[in-house]
Length: 102
Image (tube, rainbow, N blue to C red; front, side):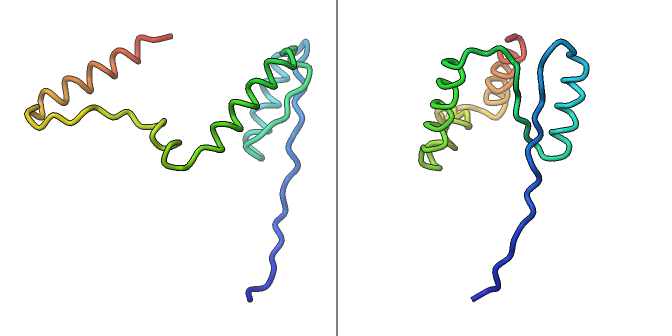
């Protein structure tokens, strides 16, 4: 049996969003550079909205890996009769469509 190891986990920084957007932006940058995470306070977002977002995230992460992967993949039906140029045109059109969206 391998020896147990312990990892040092850095505390997640708390970022206060208040009257100084520059300071909040700097704190976010620092938090993400150091840990990749931040806890945000004083943001003014309604607790019900946060609860719905958390529920949606939990539901997404509870999905089987195959279903999560399928949600991240854009798949076109396979038409053997399409030429390489036609496939490139379709892919380009889709890219242009999404590039124009806000």
